[in-house]
Length: 114
Length: 115
Image (tube, rainbow over all chains, first blue to last red):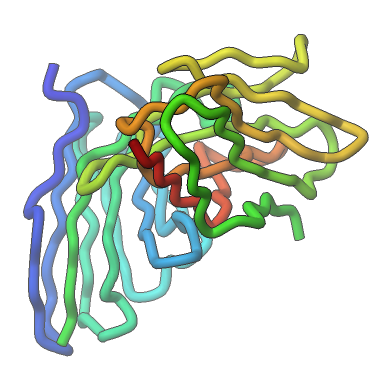
């Protein structure tokens, strides 16, 4: 199993550009999440999904969109990039919710917005 | 607001000495508490979790954590640190009524183990 994979590893955008961060998992997990990591702030939840076709907002959803058309994939879209979105983005998946199940994290995407 | 706090930005310890990484929580009800570790340029990896039961929880790589309800703490410990334990450690909680799979993380503690 590849686990949780993320592409690209690094990305530089100009303000106003759009892009999609890809996330895929091959563990047949129902729950998937996107977090952003900023220095001293830990990880903050952007959006999450509890199954194909079902998504919801997390703690910091503004400026990001998600969709979940399949169990395996959970892409994160930046509609119009802003310098405040410079961060490291992590995708995570689990069989069940975070209260009882281990979350598996991808290797991350480091995004810089100029 | 419910939260976890990691009061130390960095912990320095000599190899072979005991390692403690502190975490305190402010969570209503029975907290579900976790420790994750992040090695350089990698995603987070699960170390251990407390849901209920024994206050001493044993996890991966020789780590353990003690849940202390009276002190609202969940400190991570290792009896003898290795250089390879140098990493960023995160305490996290999942609230009882958390939607989906939301984890709330502390700010992280960087551990540096010197040979």
